[in-house]
Length: 409
Image 1 (cartoon, helix red, strand yellow):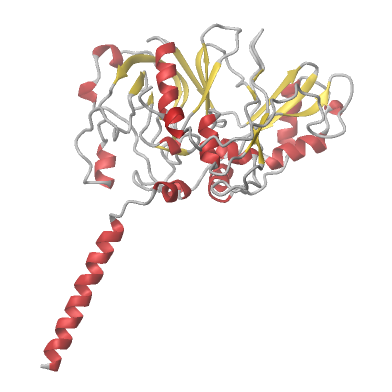
Image 2: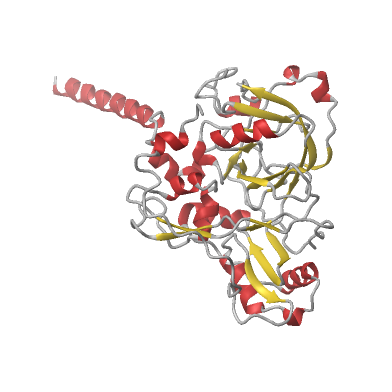
């Protein structure tokens, strides 16, 4: 009898353990916990099946596209691929004649009692990693109330033709040049993760859709057999409320049901935008708008007689910053010095290499001064800039979340 009871107890414990494991496997994390472990979340690539494409889409122009190439041994469903940083020693192209060099200005903000960096990033139209890189010593989830954070709204523009939509993957930022020569509208974006990178090159917007339908790809179904055949318009649609279809059939610019993904490398190649931002862009851009995607981590440009250097985090540093707030230092090499000197078009003797080294090592993601036209600066960031607006003392989050992030607006 005792032996029978023992077998019964063992069987009961085994079944309980299995059921507990299943419950843990399918448990949904709390929103804040999900945000803190975001680097481990695999986001779906948005791709409609070929039969859903119109004849116009299949014949849309798509030139100079550089698609990501898998390395030997990589499998299609491997999400733990080695990260390959962009080669920063490639010479930078020149700015086009009469091109704008920069946009925006640095600001500061005093954190409220309930603010997180995620809240602040969305309010100021920044990506999460972009804001954290500029404030490496600030706790992203439980910052000190009243602590001042830098709002990195000052950027050098990518070195390419300023026509239509221009995306710099290294900045995880999009610029829309409605009128050539005038200041563009800019938005943060989420882009493809390693192994499923967003391509570089040129294409166009071939179609605009309100309330798009999302179709999981065969790869997604293989990874997650429980996915439905499609998801129509609604709050759980990964495409969000609006989508801009590109001449690259499997890639889109679209909204998202996961706003925390903006400013991170978590998609399957598409470019995601905050729900409120995709609605704004959707109204601005017509079908046929040119889209240019570049990947320029290091940017150099002259502004009002001063030479600025913007060093954005590399892919591997981006992952480190997202998770830990710190990153492995990449030093200023002789090859990168030549890139900076050639892009500046000025003698190397004018450049403060201590300032440049500090900028490259810190990777704050916003421009700092490394030279002046007449003389070498003594240290980075000493160039006088217009004074930023005073730091607000109220919380962005408290009492205003619904009004600011209501997706129905």
